[in-house]
Length: 129
Image 1: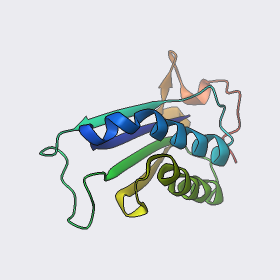
Image 2: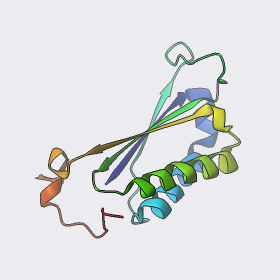
Image 3: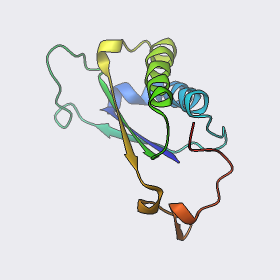
């Protein structure tokens, strides 16, 4: 499972939403060997007053929070971060300085999906990549 939250200023996210989602999904599919049909993205669009950031970032600044089942290798997680830093700028023109990424790993038993816990769920993909 990979749930992605994308935080940014609404007026900047709206025009790039599809391209950004496609870039993120491409990175997740490639780096985590994730099924292409499983896209879970949540855009959290904020007003400039609601989204504060340091002066060395532009108003295109994004925060990505990615929640995944634990079990991926360190190299797979690094590959995901590298792919995001490659594909997002290519697709949107956002600079590396304006992209911040955090990966949160949790045990499968801490997830509830389709009425059962994640550790009881039958997956059509491997978590241990």
